[in-house]
Amino acid sequence: MAQSKILLYYVFTPIPDPEAIRLWQRDLAASLGLRGRILLSADGMNGTVGGEIRAVKRYLRATREYPAFKNLDVKWSDGTGLDDEGLSLDFPKLSVKVREEIVSFGAPGELAVGSEGIIGGGERIAPEDLHEFVDAHEDVVFFDGRNAFEAQIGRFKDAVVPDVSNTRQFVAELESGRYDHLKDRPIVTYCTGGIRCEVLSGLMKNRGFNEVYQLDGGIVRYGEQFGNDGLWEGSLYVFDRRGSIDFAPGAARIGQCVVCDTSTSDMRNCAEPTCRAQLVACAEHTETPVHCPSHAGVLA
Image 1 (spheres, rainbow, N blue to C red):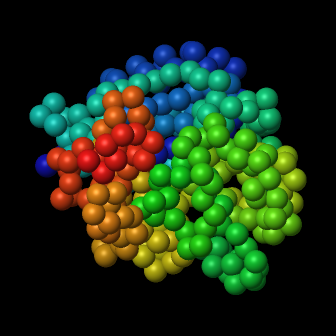
Image 2 (image 1 turned 135 degrees about the vertical axis):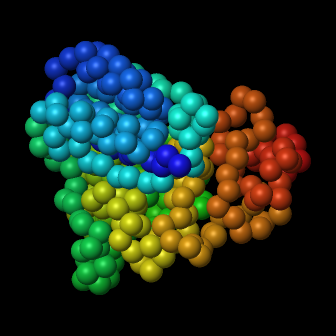
Image 3 (image 1 turned 90 degrees about the horizontal axis):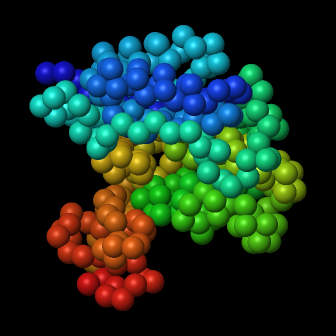
């Protein structure tokens, strides 16, 4: 049976003609039968694609042949499977777009990118060095660089989780004064694969946070090394049809179903058609409409 794989990757690098790269990437991925989402801007590329393992490997090899993409940061994970046509079950289609930002923080003018990546971001901490760093800094703060709903099913122990539903809210959140008491403490930003905290760490430094670091490779690379035996608790939310992944059997279930409070890592969309909120809902309530608190019929 053909094996399904998902590739999560990004690179910050100047791209003189993002539209030309978009056309090349679209044709390359489509020719290999891949599905997923690829975003390009003048500052780099960010994507996640899935398909048959040999096709994904060929895609990665061809993409890295473009000189600007030689330092592509890549993570692999198992896909759910392939349909009868050999296409990934984890994505509905292939989407390749050019945007002003490959991560939409709403601050493109602040981003400085060179051939080696972002200029002025937080210092990187490798996963294998994180525990030693924490032991040496008793006042260290983990700062979640994801949307707040993602942290409901998994986060670093005692992490600060900003109340944001999308990355565009981070700038206002940082400027609100809520975190000014952290400005002189060592802060380790983290996110799924590393791309969001690449940007966030720089935004924080620009706003007076004096000692900001970023977890190199994000939660994914840390979880690959430590499974359930480190500082990470729970499951990792992913933006595809898998919904979430565990790094090892027996991962803690820290999410609580909005209907019955059962511990779970399952999430669903709010039943209100106009709402984009993601809610924790256990398997027992997959057929029950669930609503976020801002809509009538809460916990219906």
